[in-house]
Image (cartoon, rainbow, N blue to C red; front, side):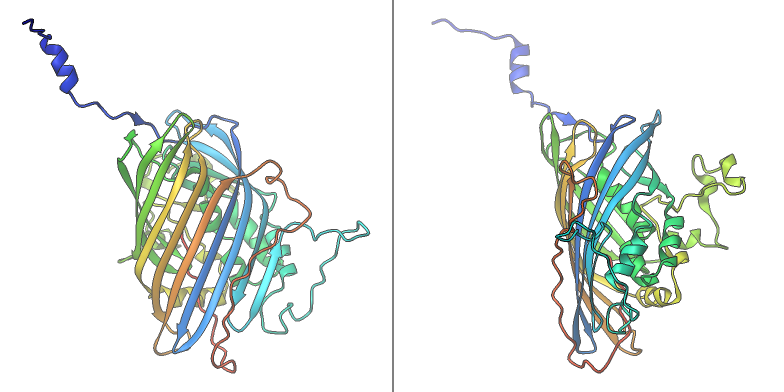
Length: 410
């Protein structure tokens, strides 16, 4: 009988575990890369105000383009964000609803563009809610403008500039400070950039491996902390598929945002590139937000009504906060191809009526997609918007102060 003897190294190769192939997931877009996106965000809130039930809802769609202006040696890039269209609807308890679209009204049969008339009572029968026309006029301060952001290789937005001027201009055109702040503020612009880049790991990952992201911030006055786990499900030569799960909870202790307010100690001296000669020059542009952990806030730009709403939410408590979703990342430029996310949470906050508490059940959906050809430019026919369901309060005679708008997710 013949015995075949294999060399020892052959057995070693056969028995050794096959190393899992790893893939680099980071921002790799070259200078001049431009990608158009459409982001759709739907937020619904079921409010219990001392036994009085009411619903709030908001649908928002942003059309925008990000263009990589410069790329540093360490991979940090400067990005220009240009918003081409904002369309949406809002439903407010006991106040009614508004639809708005920054695109011009659709042309009539005669080919002439329809004109929007601004009613003297704000368009809501004197109930104090601005009309869609006034919201559109205010939001045009953001459309066509270029906002500049700095993004690191993991997709973290380090700063964004140009928002303060646009927000100030928007508020000067009407629409109500609180309404405008719920639609577009510093945080909203920063998040548009984040939506384009996603949350990427620092090192290469194999299928099944995970990385985490932590975010502590104030959203509409409410301190919150989210912990997200991303897991690489699969990849090919074009895209990498990532699963997203996470939690949202109340943030304990003072927010780092408070440190950025006038009179507070500023940690910028410890940050790289913190001291810049241009910052001391009169009229030099200043970043609207510095975000070590995605931190930004627009409190300094709020009016008295919005400040009161934020103060109510300062002491809010978040429970059962959950995040789930998925993300497709391009292997060619590291930007998002498509992402879906669902968020839910239960909020308990002091009643704006004084005494007692109110509870808010918040659910939101977020869809991020690359724009199809033609979608990156404004069109003349407004896109239909699905209005949230409105639930009338049990006692319509009692008019509570408008509860603060809660965050729906990243």
